[in-house]
Length: 79
Image 1 (cartoon, rainbow, N blue to C red):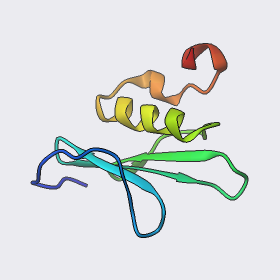
Image 2 (cartoon, helix red, strand yellow):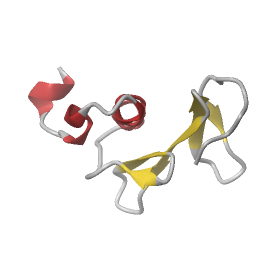
Image 3 (cartoon, rainbow, N blue to C red):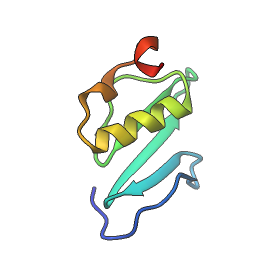
């Protein structure tokens, strides 16, 4: 989903999810019932789940740039 507005920093939504906007695209990160994290870039969910909120935020931010590595969940990729 594209928004014709300015970029933002990460904030917390009324539902408790983290969100930000970059280049008019909404990035959203939330926690699943099993404790893992999901990430969304615009209308597309990033494949897989993540061990931490910070990993999910990175995946969402890389997804906006079309970086295929945003789908990796192995420990080596996250450093």
